[in-house]
Length: 114
Length: 109
Picture 1 (tube, each protein chain N blue to C red):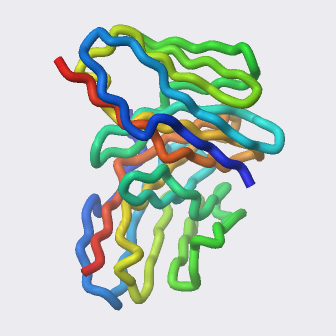
Picture 2 (picture 1 turned 135 degrees about the vertical axis):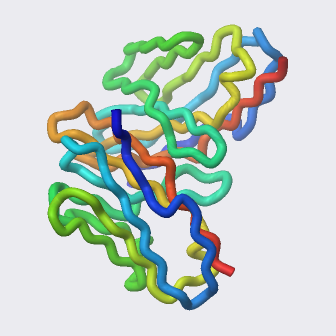
């Protein structure tokens, strides 16, 4: 059984560098989500795709953030000109087309900006 | 905007000592309340979905209940392996979940 896969699991970068995270959802799931989680907080919604269409972006997603899902399969989340405040766990989740609404999360990609 | 408040922030239990976690919510039209378990450094793991007041779901030592304004997660006779952060989330539209900050449960042997 293949769950949601995220890479890399950990990324340490210097302030000002660009980073990209990849998410491979569960194969039959057409909905894909990105969340961000900081220590002691719950996950915060960033963006949502249905197939290849990006249907909502949170105001948390500044111009330095961009997400894509070009063929409706895997997705990438890029952060340009990273800042120390970007340090967090970036979680990807997917859900099936006729599901009950629950999201299935990957293990996350932890970003540390020095 | 949907709001979810979980209490307490942390809970320390002795093995076998039952307790309850609270999730209070404000949402314009609840379309589901979700409980997740999260272990350190891992992604959240789905536990339950509740849709209407009075509904209950059970899984091993966990039981979730729902009223019109809050949900409870009851942990009966917990074991050390039940130690985790428990997250509550609500859905008010077709897709997005809004999460609380979680309750971190520590069960001592």
